[in-house]
Figure (spheres, one colour):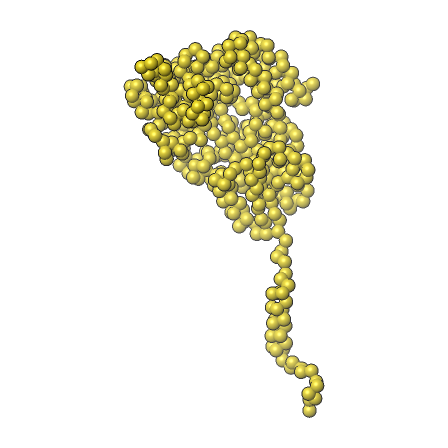
Length: 440
């Protein structure tokens, strides 16, 4: 007979398991077991909420393909300076955007990982990209340090209503600057008091790259093919003539909107939207707004030529990877994410709503951009662009652009003949180029 003081004995296995399960359930409620450790990748962007949408779409797909990996998207203010400080301090993001003016600096300065070994190992077909655009991502050492994010080219918008009122046929691909100037003269119209009411064109003469594209239109470059010499290029008579033609649209021909008008209207886009200019030379950024809310009918076309090349250039951004990731697994995942962002799938998400232009023609064809009457000229212009000097020369703004600013200002302000201004600055430009490439 069992004493009333004896501890009860569970005589069946099922009863024991039931008791253990109950105890475990109570324990997990009170003391939950931490989830398996995740790898958290950080991606940095300067884009605001709207621009982050396609990036988040890529991230969501990447996370679904890589269980246990979490990607944290960070919008960074004072972008370039903070990214550089973070990388130097060992706390940089794993993947980050880089602007085209900084490609060379990040490559030369060890601020971006060399992607060439990864591309070759994985057999990534670089032939998928627009050739000149891909070339911008290849540094002078032959290696690739960034993959394309998106781009724009310089293109032409025209106000169909103003063209119709003036009885002028719309510009067509392959039009020349001689034809364009004649149109602009006819489209520049004055009121009864003699004040100009509508200008033939609005284009910013202070935007240096547009002037350099004029030289490209005449088959000339402002620097040597190795980007290290200016003599014989910037000062070549054909180059000087092309640069001067561009500046003379306002100074001599009187068809370009003056600075005061641009400033009062909030820039070139504002002048065009206000109907104050019949032609706008700009990037693709106004297309969506004009389609939705444009106050007039408009068209787009590639920029004019001088009979050789279209006067256009590339503006773009790329994706880079932190070169200081020590953990091999983390580094491999960062590359895998960057590759996804910079190749077909990422390009698709980036451009599917025409938020941006894809760097891969097959993707542009897939989303219908090549067949779009407004975007097609900007996309086609990418195959006609001049060499993009700033993607090859580290610290291009200090090395070349600041010297050219003095040249441009001297001419626009009536202080010097353009050829004289170039000749007086070219020695300083050559010295800066040599220093940039470590030749002094």
